[in-house]
Every structure is written in C-alpha cells, then in structure tokens.
Amino acid sequence: MLAEEAGQDFSPFNVVGWHGNYAPYKYNLDNFMVINCVAFDHADPSIFTVLTAKSLRPGVAIADFVIFPPRWGVAEHTFRPPYYHRNCMSEFMGLIKGRYEAKEAGLQPGGGTLHSCMTPHGPDFNCFEKASNCKLEPERVADGTMAFMFESSLSMAVTRWGLQTCSRLNKEYYQCWQMLRSHFTPLQQSKK
Ligand SMILES: O=C(O)Cc1cc(O)ccc1O
Ligand SMILES: [Fe+2]
Image: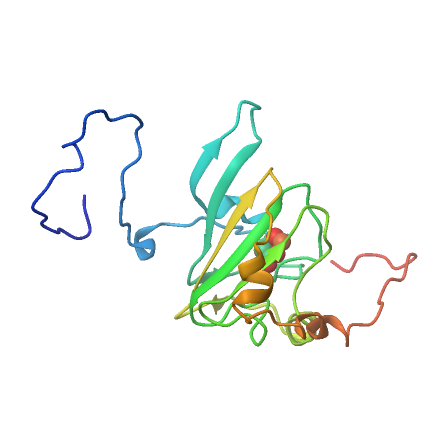
C-alpha cells in the first residue's frame, strides 16, 4: 500500500530505456512490529531489521536497516540498554525524533553517529548509571522516539562535507563516556 499519492504530468517510464528495479517508497515505521527479548539478556538489534540487502555470503548483509521504536523493556537479570561493544559490521545511527535511550543528550533529532567497524562504543555515562541501578520492572522505552541504524559489512567513508564543510561535527561527543569508571572484577560471581 502506498502511504501517499502524488500526481505528475509525466511518467519516469517515458524514456528510451529503463533498467533496474528501484522505486521510491514511503513506509510508516510506526507500523513495523518489532520483536524483542521476553526473558533475559540483550538481544542484538538485528532483531529490529526492517529491510535487508543481502550479499552473496549467507548471513552477511550489505546493509540492514534497523529501527529502535517505542516498545516495552522487560528483560530480567541484565543491563537493558545497548551493551558496550564493537562489531565487524559498521553502524550509522540516526535519530528522527525523540531521544535515543543510550545517548539522551549526545544524539539530537536530525543528527547521526558513525560506529565504524571495530570501534568500541556504547551508552553514555548517564544511561549506564541509570540502567545499572534501577529496579528491573517492565518499562516503556523510547516513547515518542524513532531512531534508526544502517548496519553494513562494508566500511563507510565520511565526506569532506560531513567532516568540515557543514560545520556540524560534534567534537565533544567523546565526553559522554569520560565519566565511566572500570567496574571489572574478574572473580565476581554472576548474581541471579
Ligand atoms: O550502538 C548502538 O547504539 C546500536 C546498538 C544497539 C543495541 O541495543 C545493541 C547493539 C548496537 O550496536
Ligand atoms: Fe553499536
């Protein structure tokens, strides 16, 4: 179903030749029914994939388009926000509206953040503190929010426009992790 109809006085098929199978399509992301963990542990956000472009290697996408829509968080015995991690995939994240739960201050609507292959990243300090100390009851996550991610097995390059010309690079972004302290205690038993 098309979300919107528009008229035009010509057809793109009025050309000498037509090759390919691409067509512009508008889709209301609110209609996408995400699934999530109902037991314990944080499931990888590939479970939120709306569209995928397969590569020739099974299980390795050229690009997955993933969303982080309003939903319930119910997982027990776990740290519910995104874990600190690095991937062999590269991630480009963006925020359409609202506040991304792992970066409430650092990622503004219209903004983007690039997590290139093998670059460690994760939630900001405030998110870490809140999620480490809260009682794990069922809770709403991301109400009024729509964040997205393009995850790719290929590397993404940043253009000169993105880095310099647009003058919108947030040079203070790294500070969202500055307050984090090491809590690694190798002998600690997991509390269940
Ligand atoms: O980095 C991010 O914020 C995106 C992301 C979210 C998540 O819940 C788990 C992994 C991941 O890359
Ligand atoms: Fe990530």
